[in-house]
Amino acid sequence: MGQTVKAEALERFGVALLEAAGTPAAYAREVAANLVFGNLRGVDSHGIRLLLYYLDHIRHGLMLPAVGGEPLAEFGAICVYDAAYGLGAATSAACCAIANRLAAAHGVGVVTARRANHFGAAAFWARRMAEAGHIGIVFCNASTIVAPWQSKEPKFGTNPICMAVPGPYEDSFLLDMATTTVAANRIFKAFQNGEPEIPAGWAMDREGRPTTDTKAAYEGLVAPLGGYKGTGLALMVEILTSVLAGGAMGGEIGGIRFTEKPLSVSHFFLAIDVRRFLPAGEFEARMRRLVDEIRSATPGAGYDEVLVAGDPEIRIERDRRAHGIPFSTADLAALREAAEVWGVEPLQLDNA
Ligand SMILES: NC(=O)c1ccc[n+]([C@@H]2O[C@H](COP(=O)([O-])OP(=O)(O)OC[C@H]3O[C@@H](n4cnc5c(N)ncnc54)[C@H](O)[C@@H]3O)[C@@H](O)[C@H]2O)c1
Image 1: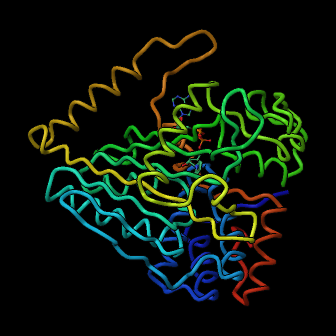
Image 2: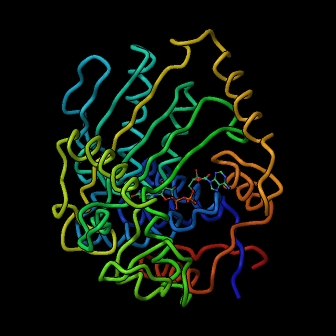
């Protein structure tokens, strides 16, 4: 049976592990907050469990916990950033701060980052820009585990697309989606948790045949979202990340579960100042009208409501803030082991 953990306890635990691995306090807080954000919103595939892989990469010298990266060039509204293998959340915080500064000065700010590490859920970074009054658009490329449509050979990653808008966090459009049917971590997690089957449409086996067998999916390929359209979107993300950032491409990219080489992905952050387009408050008012209109659409057969992107996660977050974040026994055992290895206090469980 699993147990629940409070977000604050989880964040403290994450910070302690990161600091034990040589991470400065400010970077440790960004990474832990980013991962707990994933757990709080039900995106457990991008939650604290990822920290175990980060620690492995730190131990192998592939992630450099004390490195914050630096801008290589800044021109007008554009910045090219070298993440220099620092922790993904540490360098993404720096990139978002630059994008926000550039958008405040020019109406728009665009930052690309090369030699970057995993930055968890993209929504965390898009919200960082939305909180500054900007539309925040975030892309990243990822390990090559996705075959282009009509192929069985992996050529790119799950390359997520994310957009947040200014407005209340509790009631905003917040789209954060892999360009595969699901993020790869969902399949890995199902495998780690010993679930025999995954839903149809999530994955293909090694030969490119659709499969619901978790093991075959784990050893096979993540399915592109909506066939060739998903392949096109993934390629668009690849162009705006690795190509534009001058970063690692294709087989040059590592994997978070492997330690032969650095992950070396690329990130793209775009901040758009809505106040340069509309009088103050009008964007937010127009968004309100739009989402109300969408949510008021008549539900189709089998549904009793219509949602906008971000609604499912915020509901989970409200519940998990009130009742704690549930963890499987397997996840808790892995976190307990990490605490022993790094010599930190074990994770404080609810009712423990
Ligand atoms: N860092 C990386 O390398 C990387 C790579 C891929 C994915 N990811 C992350 O993985 C996470 C999960 O991605 P995913 O594609 O599995 O997410 P998902 O399929 O669960 O959700 C995708 C989007 O659809 C929206 N949505 C879900 N149900 C809805 C409904 N009924 N009506 C309207 N909208 C609805 C969600 O709010 C979300 O914005 C994301 O946070 C993403 O950033 C990260």
